[in-house]
Length: 553
Image (tube, rainbow, N blue to C red; front, side):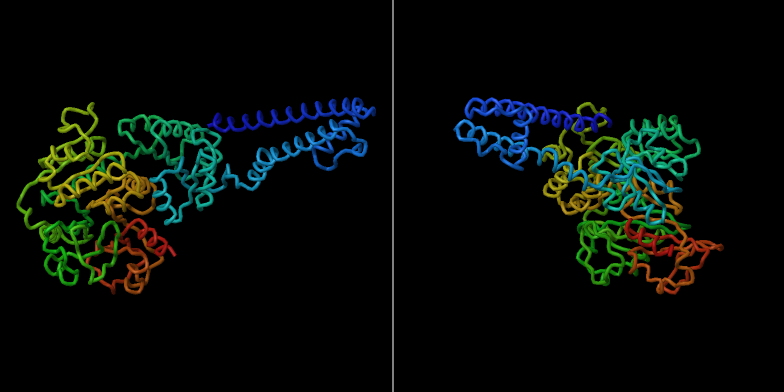
């Protein structure tokens, strides 16, 4: 980091030195030339200091020489013109090279390098998963400080409202400036090697600090723990398992991807498949509640979560229902949402990409005895990769049997390639469901528009898992499009659900409440929240954040 900062400084100094040297030599030469020209062409003897005075006046345009009335020869007039042009050239060179940069530097806001915040969470470097984590912390009133090594990025983040200090997170001094000795936790959120260095630096300052490290490669977890991490988060395996459950659900009805909340009470996301009897029906006409007994919390319409959904909203083959109910009720909904022509057929799952996420997904499918085909374009992959090829290539997909596949699980580590592959698969086999892993949350909407049925961003899962290890509320499930939390709500005590108007104000839903006598799941609008209640709340990240703010006021 130091070398990157030193390079532009050294370049500026060399440029300034060259400029001063050139200007000095020019002034000296013109002084000598003027002194000689006056004696030679005008017959007038001037001292060196008098000649220097004339040259400086001419260069700076403050005057054109006190001896101007003595210039009668052409050579002196030509020399005067040359001095004027040279002086103006030096002035116009000074502006862009030195004056303007100095003004810009003076106006530019420098990022802070220290903080006085205490009882905070220190995050080393700013990433997409870190942004999710910070949003979670902010919603719970937990302070944060981000250590950002890039100066321009630190300025940008500061202007966006984040608490940032500029410095090297691997340096002990920077960590001390971040006040880690009084922090509640440190999140090492860089690459695997840098995180190990950050952990070691932090342990030089304090042995009491809670350190949570992010590991891209699960195999480095032991090294981070040996360096001093209290917890190492590696969500790729969890993401792979979750995507496999979504991809397998049309094939294996008993493949349980629901979230258990209490005895015989679960939350699930159920995809409406092509050719289902629900496709094309309005919610009010579908009679889902009467036919299955589930309660609809919200619906994903091509990546947009609507809660509560309008009774007039129309379901299509890309709708994902977020519901609560018993295992039997959820099973009835699964059957209702399945394709009529495929209900009794066991298809295959195509797994594209055999990195950590794809490997875990394939192992999950294998454990459920579900037929699957693995595609990867890296020829060095293990023998259990069935097809070596590019998943964006139609020939590769046909070789994998895409036209007869029930689902495709795209686990490739490139969002752009995943988007293009989704477009290709949608054209080649419209009836095949597309389940996608995305790296960045920004790619989620593009993937839905390209034709994906279910998308889960690694950055979102990672951020939630990090938050769950630090937050005061219990994050029940992280590997989902929605967030399910168990949390207190002192700011809502004494209000009924209809009075609090939680769904309209936050977009999240209270589905259950824990009291001394057990778990209450059959709660209606008249249910009154008590001070000692622990609520189970379901919603998007933004919805849960809004709920946390509402519940704490």
